[in-house]
Image 1 (cartoon, rainbow, N blue to C red):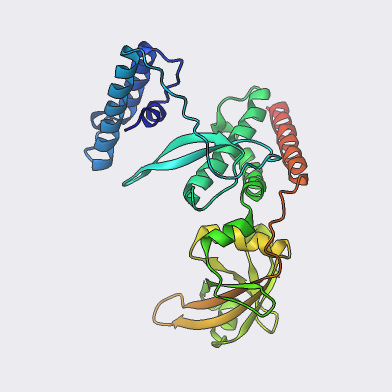
Image 2 (image 1 turned 120 degrees about the horizontal axis):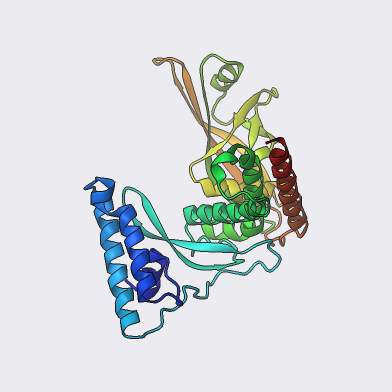
Length: 325
């Protein structure tokens, strides 16, 4: 375990003395020790062992009057200068029953799939959103979120999607996530993805899905709410597509929204289950993406204004809520 990892585990800074480190150690052991949580699960035992190890390393460094380095290494991803706010960069410390993360740095970094796991990005964006909303809450004298979770949620969702649009550069990510299946005569990259449709019961959508055949084309109806809604040749809506990798929603959909590619949906296979109730149908879709522009479009500066609008709306919402109390 490195000094930076130990400092992150205990939440120690370079200004903390031995006494403060010991206090933080006792607090964490009071939260995670197997005897306290009444559990002998391996993940709980391992957590306590890591806390002990971190404390031993940091105490030795302080006793020997060595400085604890601040956990802000240079991250190799591109910096988005005009992003609204900085975000924490996390890495997975270990993976057992429940993942544990370590914060390695902070800044206005784009998501680089080669450096940062997607679930670490999600944690980072969620944390950045909560920070922004908590700043508004604190300005309104609110320091406990259990009374305002219902009020906060729609603003939280909205901010999450806006920030993801600032930090996820879709063309750059596409190049790193997948290889094109071919390059056509006009030098355009063509990518192929697997997607799914499915439903249960005897609804209109179910009846439309079971009529589909291999090779049938589907058509995009909308790209709202980070979903691709498709319909058949008769215009019957079949619901939204599912991808096996969550990251693809944040790459493919923005590319289509920015008109950077042409898309084609082809039915590959159909599975109907009538031996269960309710009946179920699953449709495998081949999604072909032909890139018309491989140059990345920069972050829209108008997104910062949109974020300001959301935060101002949240501020007004909290003021109205307090006035009614």
